[in-house]
Image (cartoon, rainbow, N blue to C red; front, side, top):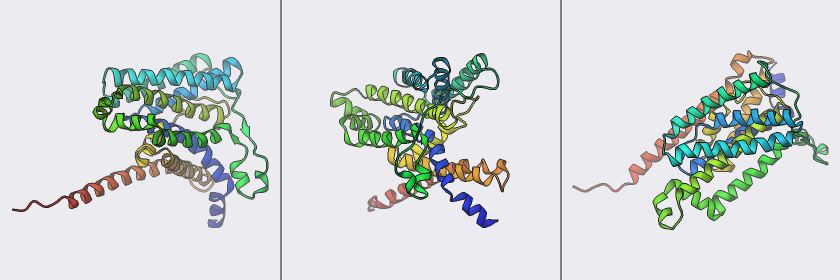
Length: 312
């Protein structure tokens, strides 16, 4: 039995599922990294993902096209990002309260609209994102089965990780974005309003979280929407942001770790109760946060040891 479990856990299907599970978390984490660099703690990403999932399916349902669904999601992402920035940046409201309110509002809005348009069961079978087949990969054992025939957004996410890393660390706008969170007064002295960078970060977060939801409903679940289908992925994405110190590449690695354990949980359902296996990704998320706290405490202790002792 143990041999069967190991073969199932470390199969190509597990790693393929890892990519599919990690992608919505990774996209949201990229957005959360932008607001984190701007000095904004955004826990409203779960609501942003949920609205992205709903409006992606709504656009696909209304216009008969997944591309139209993605376009509607991008428009929604800008609106939600502006809404978040309006209260957090303009009115200087508590970001934790606004994020919580956004999550609650998104759950209520999407549930109401879904029941009104699709009925209580939600909807499925709408036009979905295309899968991509890469010629030549089939000839590579194991790897071809992992990387081929995936939703378009899985490959787009790889590109976005690179773009966002270059944006944050290799462009003036990325430098200003980080300065708006770390040294806003210094940035203001240089003639650049940190508030503008915070607005930009909020909009980027709305767009990327919206794409996370679009992948979830139009890619991973092939044109399906169900109430509360974000399933706390926004909070997991936030944990990835904190774990990675808002580094887009490291955040993607953390999302892959979540995806791997989520895939393992699905594989183990043939041998263990699903009630137990479903908790595995969330246990890993808690371990990640504990690691962050321990790492922070160690740094504080080491910093204290390096301080010169005052002589009496």
